[in-house]
Image (cartoon, rainbow, N blue to C red; front, side, top):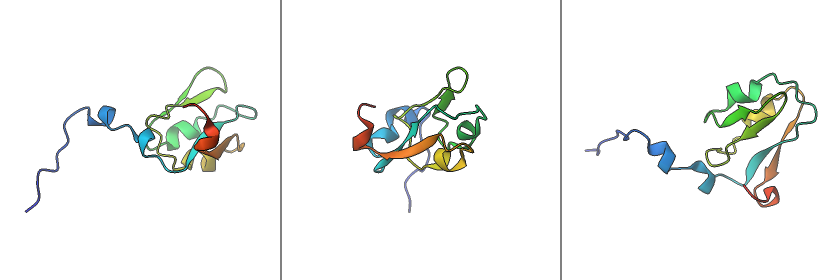
Length: 89
């Protein structure tokens, strides 16, 4: 009735979400960050990483633009911006 529903290992590397993300993506302001790691923990794709004290980056190739990181940030140091305004990835 249905075809096989099993993915091959490593398929997420071939299916980057950046090409089909919605209109918004996170921008890390890095002004009021307290390095709480909440954005790292909440990200469903695990694409947010810390790069030293209070400096976080997002791998936009895998970001879905869900906005969970911006919602959970206790210092409102992440804002969602339109994809066009983001400039280069």
